[in-house]
Length: 497
Image: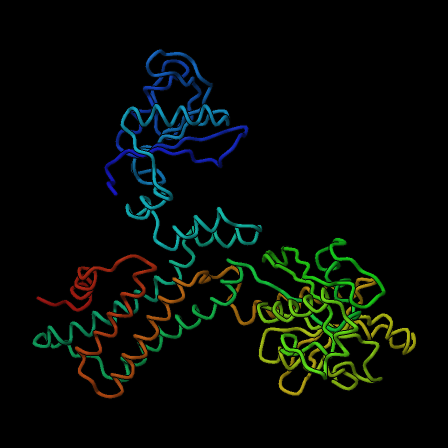
C-alpha cells in the first residue's frame, strides 16, 4: 500500500438514496475535486467549509448534478491527509461517474477499509479505535453503538495507558539499575518489583474479566428455551419477543421444529430459540439408535416430532444461555425452590445445564396461585432466589406466560446472568478475541516475570518477560519505542549529571 496515493471510494451504502457521498483522500484530492466542480460564487475549496456547487463533466463542462463539497485540509481530517467529500443525489449512475472521473485524473480506487487503515497508520487512531469504527457501523442496537462510540473515543486505550505507563516505569527503573550502577542507581528490591508487577497485573486481570460480557455485547448471544411438552415454552417465547411468533395450542407437542427470533434485550442482540418439547423416552442419545425398549415410545410419536426433539437437544448444546421451563402446577405443595415433584426429564435437563449459564423458569405460577388460594397469589409470582438441582444452584424466576407477570423479572435475570461480574457499563470492555488474547499474553508474561523474581533470577532475565508484556500491550495501544524507555530513564534518575 502506497500512502502517497490519492484514493477514492463511494462512502455510502450501495443502492439508491437521497444522498450519496464520494470520498477522496490524498495529496491530490483537492486538485482532482476542483476539476469536476463549479462552486457557487466562483470560490475555491476552503478547509472546514461545505460548498454548494455543480458537478461537471471534466471534458465538456456539461452539468451532471448539484452537490455539496466539503474539504478537510491535512492534518485535520479523518485520515490526516487532504480529504474531499462530495455529496451528490444518491443515484448509482452519478456516484459511479464521480468515481470514473476521479480515477481518470489519477486517483486510485480505495481498498476495503483503506481510509480507516490510513487513519491508523498515520496515528489518527489506534488499533482499538479502528476496530470500533467497524463495530459502530455493524451495530444492531443502540447500546452496541454507544459501546462502540466509547471505544472510538478511546475508552480502552485510556484504560490501558496508565497500566502501560507503570510497566514502562518499572522497566526503566530496572534498566537503570543494570546499566547505570556506577551512578548509584540500584536495582529495585525483589519486594518492590513484585509489588509493581502485581499492581499492573491486577488492573489487567480486571480488564480481562470484561471480555465475557464484551463479547456478548459485540456478537450477541443465543438463548434456548427448553422443557417438556406443554409447560408453556412457546407462550413464554412469544412474551419475550413481544409478538405471536410461535403457534400455541393446548395440545402437547405443537412445536415440532426450532422457532427463532432476534430481539434486543438491554441493548444486547439475543437470538431466542423456541424448541420442541422433550419427552422422557426420547431425551437421551438413543434418538439415533433403535432398540426394543423404546420402540413403543416411537410408535406414539411421528417422525417430525422425533427430529424436532433431536434439534431441541442440539439447540440446548449450542446455546450461550438456557431457560429450563418447568410447570409450577406440577411441583409439590411447598416452596417452589425445592426439586420435590420434578419429573425425571426435568431432572436430566437440570443436570445437563448445572455447570452452564442457565435460568430455571417456574411457569404457570398463576395457576399454582389459584390452586393454593388467594393468600398465596402475591408470593407465587416473586422471583425465586435459587433453584437447587443436585449438582448446582441455578437462579430461578416464577412467571405466568398467560398474564405476563414475572416476565420483567425474567428479563432482568437474563441480563444479570449475561453481565456476570463485568465492569460498569461506562467502563472499558474487551470486545473481541484479538484484544483478549493480547491482554492474556501480557498477563502470562507478567506472571513469568514475578516467578523469576521469586526465584532470584537475574534482573536481565526478568526484563525479558517485562518486555514481552509490553509488546503484548503495544498491540492495543501502539508501539513503544526504546527511546520512550530511555527518555524516562534520563528524566527520572538524573543520570549523566
